[in-house]
Image 1: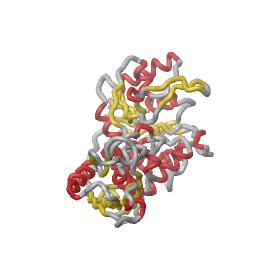
Image 2 (image 1 turned 120 degrees about the horizontal axis):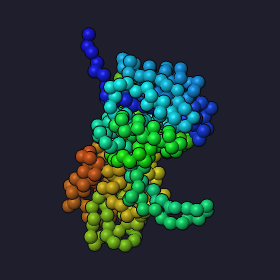
Image 3 (image 1 turned 45 degrees about the vertical axis):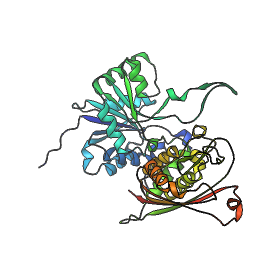
Image 4 (image 1 turned 120 degrees about the vertical axis):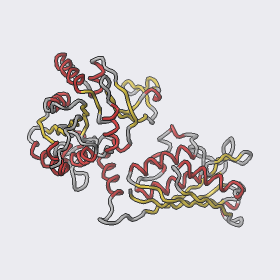
Length: 396
């Protein structure tokens, strides 16, 4: 008989929230995303990570539902799982999870079931980064422009370079976390998350890179986003069909500075107007990739509602797009793109442009061609450039 080592890491999955803002009749953890619940998807990720004790904190009256989801996700690891009843607050629910820890546990991760699509690699990375005296949280950069407001007035801008959006799981050394919870209980103070409670006890908290997939399902829009991600990942059993996307972009000549096209600067050439640098080739590639992955379009991710991309060049757009495609579960095969325009003269820099675009996409093959329209249309009259791109991606 093979003996499985007793894990020294535990993951407390907090699933006791009501989900009021989601507008559902059931607690949030038991709302369906596809054929599975939010909790089931969260547990699938937890059990795909390194072996750990798993404690699900369920809302009162739903312990049996949580047990069913736990057993389904655990498979042959079912001996590692347990369900406990949560409290009236999140802090009380985590405390209930702490009370159920095995004696061998030295590292505790606290994870929100509502972050149902968190990659297993993020869970493992947090566990590995915890030290004997410091906690760890995953976090992503804040990209929106932030304002401090008072009622209906904008009071001041907020420097987002000093901010990060915290995610879960958040990891801690067991002894210090238990002591911090005891101190918080004695003080009667309620904290917004475990990192804040841990830091209030005087302990350092560090951060590592998080993932866009680890977003929290709070509103109906979040639930729709999760469904979209899962739908584009779904493939018939036994198949791995590629997906194709088409992107087009048009920009008129205008503005100041130099032309940016196909990821390159073209000194002396008239620039294209646009929210960013007007690089119609890069923008068409972005739309083709997003379309293939079912992730919307360039306006949704990089449009005027995202002022942080104003003036950005192809490397920024394409690197971010490649990340989105990867997080949706796809690998980029190749991209073919053609632009129509009288200028610039492209042949001499074709190889350079293809290398630049390929590097921005993480090494994916990119082919760029150029043509004219024999004087026809707005491109033939020299008013602007039109681009069409086709992208091929694969699941996995």
